Image (cartoon, rainbow, N blue to C red; front, top):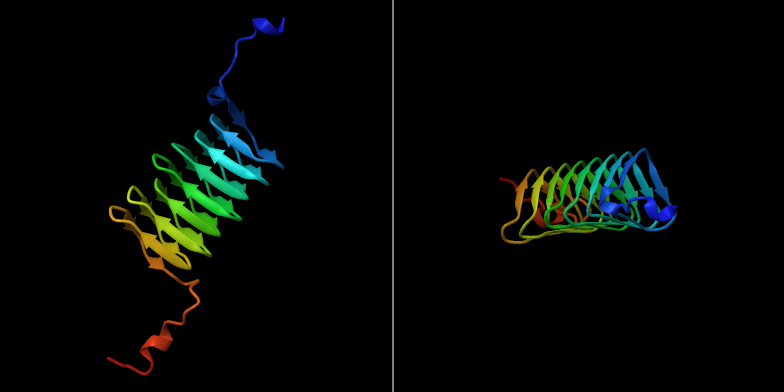
Length: 153
């Protein structure tokens, strides 16, 4: 009888192994393994492994592993990421311990805490954000050496 089995909330879900999907996935439980999603990945649970998706959004998540994203990454408030982030653009409101390498813009919200180096095309740092590391706009379309010409100290 199907009715005799207890119902499980998705936050109780615990996956041991790789999670692969052609669509979008929402993780509320725990995944111990790599996550490879062709669509959007939404995480409010925990991932212990590398994550790859077209877009990644977290809220109250715990991620221990690298994040690779073709599009936007949003690390929401109360989320903690321990691992490097590679994406086309990023908005960080949570905590990241690792390097952030983004070909486009990076926004660090007032609640962001970053322990690592940030490479981007442009960066917005809101009042209250904490960064321990270097920031480089190495993907900007401007040649910095042209501004200083032959000026020597």
